Amino acid sequence: MDTLSKDTLIEARQLISPHIHQTPVLKSRALNKISGAELFFKCENFQKTGSFKARGASHAILRLSEDEKKRGVATHSSGNHGQALAWAAQKLGIPCQVVMPENAPEVKIAAVRNYGAEVHLCAPNLAAREAGLKAVQDQFGSVFIPAYNHPHIIAGQSTAAAELLDENPDLDLIITPVGGGGLLAGTALTTHYFAERCQVIAGEPEGANDAFLSFYSGERIKEHQSQTIADGLLTTLGEINFPIIQELVSDIITVSETEIIEALKLIYQRLKIVVEPSSAVALAAILQQNERYKNRRIGIILSGGNVDLAKQPF
Image (cartoon, rainbow, N blue to C red):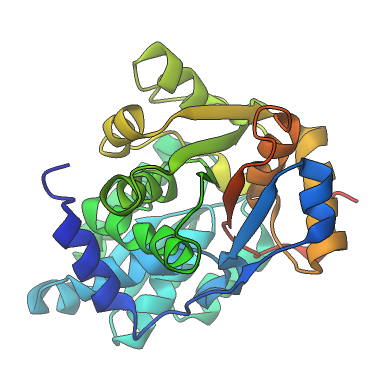
């Protein structure tokens, strides 16, 4: 955590604030009643590019040297990070290459292209993604900007929780979904430095439970066969992210596909907003453990809203 100091997080927020939205925090009496808690929804579905990923991507891009900017950037992504990096690169006139699995939602592939990046499709596995990235870097000399396993990304993602705590400094708990762990690690660092009394936990699909298994075994799982409707959470925990999560996160709760879909329905019905299934995982975890978190003041980070409307689960 030496490179992710309190000052680093403050600088990250100052650096990206002119470029991103300070997203709203919504409340619902109906969802409070259903959960038995007081819920505060940080709506990153309203963020630039439709997800919190714009925070980390813009921070990483803004930290590039002039030489690195000329070389351009590249990444592999199932969707949201690719969109965010393409958007951030386009704003600064930087070339961007994105390697995407061929089974990524069409809406996300199209969005990456619309932001001006060149998309390179590959087989839907990590080895193919990494091979595709290497080929792109060999061809273009691009700087690799990972989706979560980088201090600049984690510092950027930390700013969502910082905004949430500015508005609601007396939260007992913040919960995020977890995939690679960028948002979770950033949130945990924010509470560690600025709201030590506030716990941080995560929700994760049962069908992609590598973070849960890593957290409770003490060893990071590097490869995992995952299957879940929450397509943004199919990645395994990052090497940098894992020790931060081990030290600063209180719990990881796994939820079923049925629980994710039911939570997704509630968000649509009660908050009247569009979110992707990955966002609903956090609410699903709170609803599953409602007795445990009864009467608590809970911040829920809704991670994004990039959905394929033709493939809704209800």
